[in-house]
Structures are given as C-alpha cells and as structure tokens.
Amino acid sequence: MGGAARRKARKRQKKLMKQIEKLEGERQEIINPYAGIEGMLSNPFANLTVATQAAEMQAQQTDLSLASTLDTLRATGSGAGGATALAQAALSSKQGVSASIAQQEAQNEKLRAQGQAQLEKQLAAAKVSGEQFVFGATERREMQQLNRLSAMAGAASQQAAAAETQMLGGIGSLLGSVGTGFGNVLEGKNFITGKKV
Image 1 (cartoon, rainbow, N blue to C red):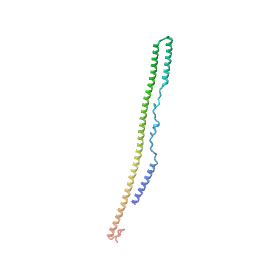
Image 2: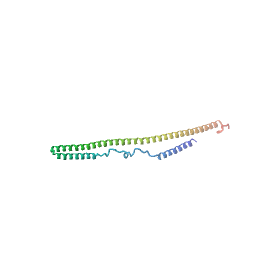
Image 3: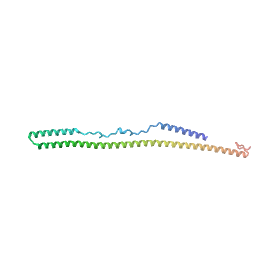
Image 4: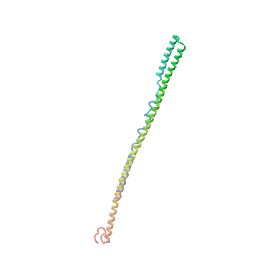
C-alpha cells in the first residue's frame, strides 16, 4: 500500500516537472528595452554651421562705405594720407569680420563637444539601465523557478516519507500478527484465531 502511494507521488512530481519545463520553454524572451537606443539619440550640435551671410553683408557694406569715402577723398583732393587711413579702416573692418567668423566657429566647436559628451553620457546610462533591467528580470525568473522546485521537492519528500511510514507501519503490523500467530502456536492455540486447539 505504501509503495503504491510513493509511486503515485513520484508520478505526480514528474508530471508537474514536465508542466513547469513546458511553461518555462514557452516564456517570452527577456528583452532589453534600451537596446538600439543609439539610433534614437543624437548630438544636436553635431552639424552647426557658421553664419557667414551676416559677415559677408558687413564686409560688403564696409567696402561700399570705403569706396564712397575714397570717391569723396578723390573729389576733395585729399592726398596719400587719406588713402592710407582708408586702407587701415578697410583692414580693421575685414579683421573684425574674420574675428566674428572665428568666434562663431569656436562656439560651434564648443557646443559640438558638449553635445557629444552629453550623448555619450546618455548612451552609457541607457546601456547600464538596460543591463540592470535584463539582470533583474532574469534573477526574478530564476528565483521563482527555484522557489517552485523547492516547494515541489519538499512536497514530494513529505509524500514519500508518509508513504514510507505507512509501508513500515504495515510491515510492523504484519510482523506483529506473525509474532502473535507463532506465540499462539507455541501455546497450543490456533495460529490465526488464537483459540485452544
């Protein structure tokens, strides 16, 4: 009787294990929600351009103004001193335009570098978050599986122990009956009924 209960408990345990394996095999794959984020993030300052149109207009206005001044100098008869002053003014104006362009280029380069640093920081943070998410989800699944298997193993162990106890009890009872029967025989009684023969 106890052996049958133990076999039944083992059969039930195998059936449950197959069901768990089937469910675990059909589980969804753990997906990193941050995978591929590189394509979604970008450096907003990567393609800044220099506003040369304003500088070109300023240079053209300076050239027109200087040409007008040169015409005035010629008309009034000013000499080489006026022309030299005019040339220096033209040079100074052109240097100002160049300085403005250089300043814009330096500012753009600074923004590009800041944007790249920010982009790399965001990518690194997303990578870490993704790895933490996948690790956490995997860890939770493994712990659930371990808990289930532990509970099943405990239940199967209890069932097997109960079946063994029942079997040993049956054997003990049988041996007790056999002992009583032999005692009856020795006393001259019927083996089974225990009445005097």
